[in-house]
Length: 307
Image 1 (cartoon, one colour):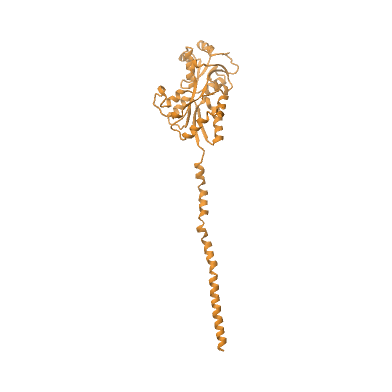
Image 2 (cartoon, helix red, strand yellow; image 1 turned 120 degrees about the vertical axis):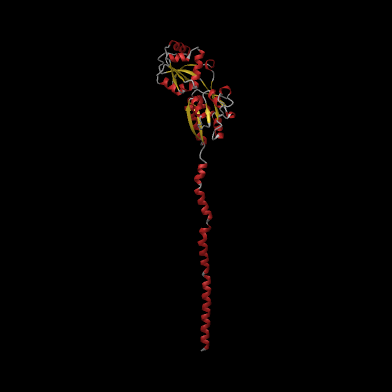
């Protein structure tokens, strides 16, 4: 009887040991599960990737295209609109352009307007903003980066008439006679507008007194060359003294062209201002204005691009 009992006890002990082994063996999957549970805590690369994605808008903001602010004479509006569009297509640089009389633009710059590039229809307004502008810089203004300044374009001062030329005006010589006789109505620029200043020189060449002419009612004025051009185009005057480029753009008839002896050369200086927010990009655009592509646009309306 003792042998069977001993045999049963041995068998029970063996089964207990096997159960213990089985219990230890099943702990391995539990460890694996623990490792799997900790995976989200250690998945930092995924979190980093998400963080990188979240910062993309900041990167795009930093890479936003440069925006250049250009103040240019009103007579340049059509050509500059075309050239800046070409430059944007090539480089991505954006533009905000303001066109007006050079005197008005000069005053806006002097009063604190943001501006990267200034292009005037005469040296006088540029000189007034340039500390190296000589006697014309009467107020000691210092807005021009003189190292970037250049004479960009030349224009011509012309005598233009409305469609059909009702007064039959053919020349400046004839205009001078008609003005003296009080038998014509002429549109011209104000005295602070370059085209008006060129007209004053033409009056001086013919010995005409502007104040007397104005008092006799033979003159009307425009605050910039576009206003003078509009008066001629709408035939509210008999003739007007404007730039060749504006006459071309509006399809007006030109009957005479002033010589340099009559009013001097019509030079358009350009410069980056020392208040520019993007001076390097502004200087690069000034260089572009002398390329063959830009020159073709300027010359198509009658400008001469200076070397």
